[in-house]
Image (tube, rainbow, N blue to C red; front, side, top):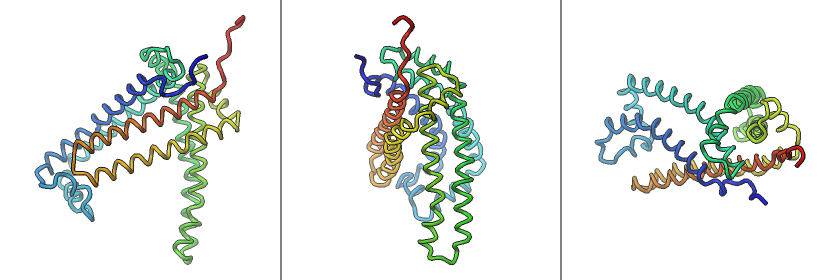
Length: 277
């Protein structure tokens, strides 16, 4: 009997995805780091006061002095993020393919990601468009309207009531993200069309809820790790310790994401047996 789909059975794919994200993060962050180091590197306390001094006066002063350079950095980083966003679709497809088959070489898994690129891209575009529209219509606009009408209320009660539409919108966003992952898993595993993948993801309400029950806490844990990394940066004076902690956190976040994708694959319908089998 084949082992159940999990991140543990494809450590090569896990490490490959982590390395890709680490290299991309370094490429995008290096120009910013080098610019700040050349401008603020002589400070006796390093760059800590630049980011953590109350009021951010040093950061505002640096922004004023580097205004021309910062516009170029923002433009270059934006282009890099756009390219990475497209490339990450291929990586995601390859990762799903690798998780789905223990014997599939990484090169073939990546080829699978290339072959499903436009379908996976379509899932992402539709999902984020829906998140933007529904988040605004069901969350931001009603919340803003309530806040304007409750100005005479107690501030705490007004904040609580005006936040309710945002909480409702957050639930909708969680559902949309879960549908997207299930659709991606179905597309990669069964070579389904974009429409079939979305239809299959929405078909079984119990399966969708089961996936959310697993994915939501792991996603929250992944977000929480970012805060932990920021806390380590403020408390430790060791650059080596901060670097190692951040890499460990990044690896853990990739592993958590992989576990969510593996769960999505397990919840898709089993492969159809060949005729005559």
